[in-house]
Structures are given as structure tokens and as C-alpha cells.
Image 1 (cartoon, rainbow, N blue to C red):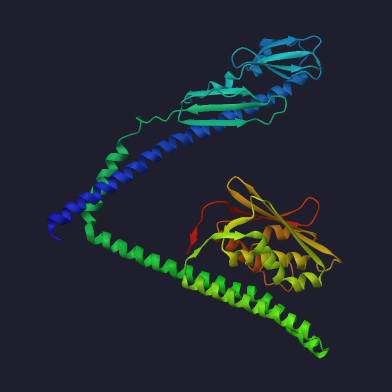
Image 2 (image 1 turned 120 degrees about the horizontal axis):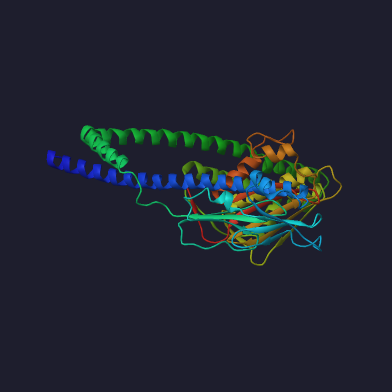
Length: 441
């Protein structure tokens, strides 16, 4: 590269950086204007809230004979104090008056006061519009760029504070932009392409180290997941083989064949899990596709057939007609449901009969799965720490099931929420994107 091209590229780079930085600086100046106005709106809301609290506090103490001038020295928002007659106790406590003023009634003492909120609101001139509206009355619509709206919690004065403002687009100081231009010019002239290349190499080194750490962390998670996920099917294989040995000694070849077939299914599951873990390590692409919930849930129930029948657990489902499929990876979804169903079965092992029920529903672009059981539910400690690695509510647990479940759901663009059902038992809510697909690497 000759000097001419070097200078041209340096100037072009400097101008590009200046324009980009200027746009960000301009956006930051506008954001600061919004932040100032937002703080002013919060202050106005607090001041109006204090005024409303004063109104509720002073009204029960008035009898209608007070000196209005003396009263307004302490409470300038009170414009008029009047006595009423025959006001029903269940009549409205607030009635709008002229402008933004309103009457506040005390039917027990048969008095009313006229309140003017503008004594507080006029202290915010930077808003294009700011006003107090009775609950149910729509705020005044304006063409302003920013809008604020917030409702008060006072029972007798159900108001909403609304405000709007316009950014001062042309009142941005020029000095920061001049300094920014000079700064980029000095940096471009002093550093040039050599410094830029050196910076790129440093960034490449940082990215390489980051990816290395991320890969190591992923391998650690996968290793822990292997220990947790393979432990359950291996235990089931051992149980089925031991049962087959007993049945073989008792001369029941049909039951032996059934037990060996169940053990074979568990070994095939181990093979599928190891294949998927290998895909994690190799960072192969996995595309989320439509998965039939009923078929997936039935398969998971078959994998845990021995556990649920041995503990007398009844497993049912109710999938809505418009929520029978979700966008997911089938094996990952089976792992998630397998972990949740296994935990539900384990939680009810000391009960004579238990149940697990799963439902689905469609709502606003999402599919929501809700799994409930007849167990004791989550303890407060479990609700707080369930997704922490190595936390387990059982002595024999290694505490990685829920951690892996949350990780798999995140990769499938889903979420999980733990709670206790009102009637008792655990309640787990899973949410998935209803439409579209996502490819995860």
C-alpha cells in the first residue's frame, strides 16, 4: 500500500468513525434529555402523591367551619371548602370540576373541598403537557415524541398522572462534536493502519481465549450432564436385568423377554444421549422442528414405566387442540420432560398413590405447558435454589437435573417457572415460541 492509499484509507476510516461516534453521541444527548424528563416526571408523581395523601389525611379532620385562608397556607391545593347536605354515604368520593380541579367529598361530615392539582403540576415547564386524570378518563392525546403515564394507589382519589414532551432536537451543544472530530483526527493520524491491525490481532486473541473458556465451560456442563442423564437409564437397565434374572429363575420366559426389551430401550436412550452430547462438543447445528407433545410425553412415560408403576403414580395429559405441537428439539424436550416427570415420581415415593398431570395451551404467540403433581410441592429453599448447580432436595441427588433442564430450555428459546399449585403439589410452567423456528449452534 502506497502513502496515497494509506492516507485516503486513514481519512475514510476517521470520517466513518467520526460519523458513527457523532450519531451515538447525538443519541446519548437525546437519551439524557429523556432521563432528565423521566426524573422530573417521577418527582412530579411523588409530589402529586404527597398532595393526594395530604388530602386524604386532612379531609376527615375538617368540619366545614375552618378559616380557608389559614387552611390554604398549609395546603395551597385546597381552593374552596363547602358544607353539603343529604350526601349519601355511598356516593362518589370524587367528582370532576372546572378544568383539572375536582371536588373531594367527606359524606360522613357532609363537607367537600375543591382541589386544584395545578399548584403542584405547574412546577414542570419542560413538559409539553402534564395533567391529572380521573381513573377511566383517557389522557389528552398529543403528537409529542415521549409519553409518561402512571396511576396512583390512593383509594379515594383514583387518578392517573399523564405527561408528554418533545425532544429538543436542535439544542444539542456543538462543542462535544468538535472535540470528537479533533480526537478522531489525532487518533487516525497517530495510529494509522498499524495500530488498527494490532488492535484487530488483540481482539482476535481475546475472542480466541473467550471461545476457549466458553468451550471448556460447555464441556464441564456436558460432562456433568452425562453423569446425571446416564445415571437414570443405567439404573433402569440394572433394575430390568435383575428382574429378568429373577423371572428366568422362576421359568417365565415371556416376562424375561419383556424386561430385556425394556432394558434395550434404556440402552438405546443412552446411545441417543451420548450422540447428542457429541454433537454439543462438535458444535453441530441443531434445528428446532415441530414436535408432537402427546407422542413425546407418551415416550417419556414409557421410559419411566417401571418407576411410576412401582410407586403407583398415575400419569395423565390434556393438550389443547391448538397447542398439540411445539418448536423444539425432540431429544432435548424428552430430556426436559424426563427430568421433570422423574422428579415428580420421586417426590411422591412415600405416598400410597400419586399423580402427574400435564396440560398445554396457546397464548399470544407462545405455547405454555403446565405440569402439576400430587406431591408435597417445593420448599421455599428449593424455589430459590432449584437451578443452582449441585443443589438437590434429595440426599441421593447430584443437583444437576434442573440446571441441565434450564440450559436445554434456553437453547430451545424456552423458559421455565417453578411454583406451588394453590391446591398443593408442585406446579412447573414451560413456555415455548409458538411459531417460527430457530437454529442453535
